[in-house]
Image (cartoon, rainbow, N blue to C red; front, side, top):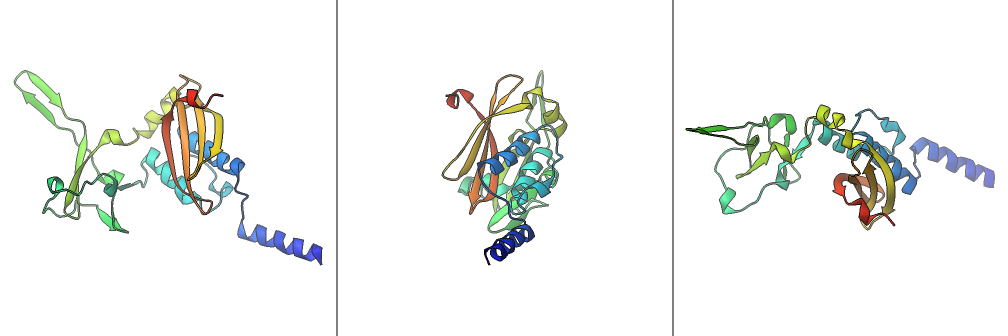
Length: 207
């Protein structure tokens, strides 16, 4: 009877594609995220299917392929930014948030030549959604992916990882200049809902 129960559980485990989600699993995902700085190739079948959307979303931020920019993260709803203009072409709304594809931003720069002075404004895009506008600057996003991959600074080695209240954090150090990089996972019921990276001071993690 016990053998039948164990066999049944094993079959269910295999059929549902369950993945043991622990520190080792999330570290593997984190290592893949870091590898994106050098290559966009990865095998998504190695990961739980519910985690793949978050991985793909982060990858799109680097490559800008099919990247969806949440404009609501940049909009300040005050009278200063109110406008009667229609939504910018390419903007759509979902779950009370405004979005636009990165490729639809079409950043433009302005050259101002006042007699002997020449001034070039940083490439930007003015975006309107639901009667409010914001200015998005090209520097707010990752640079061209070929530039990212060519940057020797983006060769990282793993240092440490630990569980947090919201999910997990993993720390890496650049083999080129020693710069620290932190990969942060936000989880909901063990599913990765968001992935973020940020520069980190590795001295804070060296014991």
